[in-house]
Amino acid sequence: MTRRLLKSSGLLLLYIWGAASLIFLLARSIPGDPLLEILGPNPDRQDVARLRHSLRLDRPLAEQYARFLLRLAVLDLGESLVDRRPVMATLRRYLPNTALLALAAMALTLPLSLLLGFLSLYRGNRPWEALVMAFSTIGLAVPVFLIGLFLILVFALGLGIFPVSGSGSGEFLVLPALTLAIPLSAFLTRMVRTALQKESQRPYVLLAMAKGLSQAQVYRRHILKNALLPIVTLAGMQAGALLSGAIVVESVFSWPGIGTLLVRAVRQRDFPVIQGTVLLMAALYLLLNLLVDLSYPLLDPRIGHDRTG
Image (cartoon, rainbow, N blue to C red):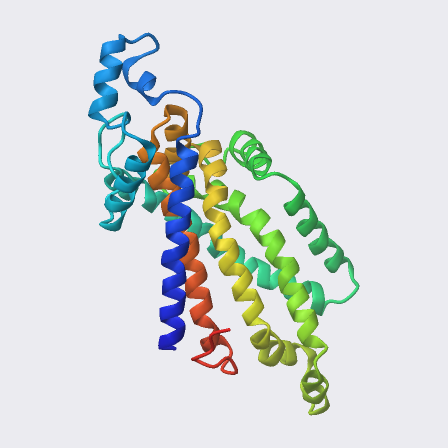
């Protein structure tokens, strides 16, 4: 287990370095001058030069990159070019809202996907299976922002049950979380059904039924347990997708999370905030996959603790 942890941690650091380098270059490829957001559309050239020098944006790109990595090594993401606040402090203010949204969406997704995937297979070729597959197809085909707009039209503007946008009490969380959960549930439902179907064809299933166990008992005691490994793997990978989906959903519902922060930073060409936000999302995604990888021996004892492949 120790070797597996060391190897995974080393790969995690390598991936974060690669992601940080790519983000640094992409942030500076955004068209426009961030100084115009600070000084206005027609600033004096001397003011622009002084500000560019004070922010060290006139230094060679290689020097800026080296400084970026050195500060990153001590978890210093720099300061915003616009409001001069530390990026780390800004992220700490916005991250809890995104984490709450992602956890709420995942809390809806996991039980719904397991239930629908189980029932679609357990019920066989019945109308229920067709309904589940229709939900899965529609959920995957419709863009997430359209799902959000549809939920706003029906439940906010039409029925008046939930607020249109903003944050505060729990009712503000329902529609954004449901918007994120629907496409994720549609994907995981298919994967759960495939995993359960594959396990149901194993020889041990016939043996269990021959011993007198009902179909429901076989699914609950054996098939679901053995199908957990691919299900958890896919759920962990899709949990990272929640972060990217949150960018769109937070914009639709004006939810004050890191997605909203990123959109604003891109509009303002605020390099440090863009770098910090995207790097945080990448690090969280990689960390989730590391935790999923380390959970394999707990889910399936057949996987050796020292397995490195």
